[in-house]
Image (cartoon, rainbow, N blue to C red; front, side, top):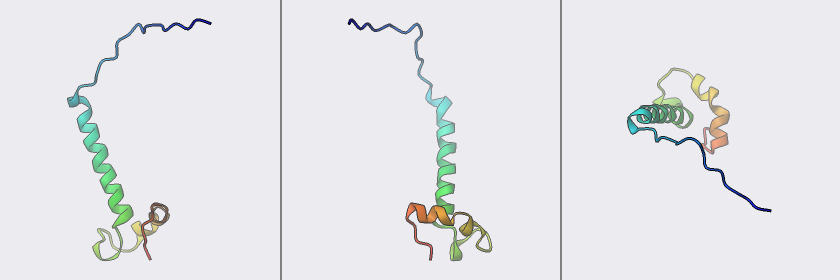
Length: 69
């Protein structure tokens, strides 16, 4: 059985850095904020009063292996 490759009829154009860099930076900032709230936001260095954020991300802390008790 012969196998043949068919050349695509289109060319994939590279996306310029100026188009995707802002989105990459935005995603990085969101990721860092999420990591802050999951890993650090509790008690003495809390941005918000109470334990609301801690309880909201409590299971995620245990899933990621961060102690919180």
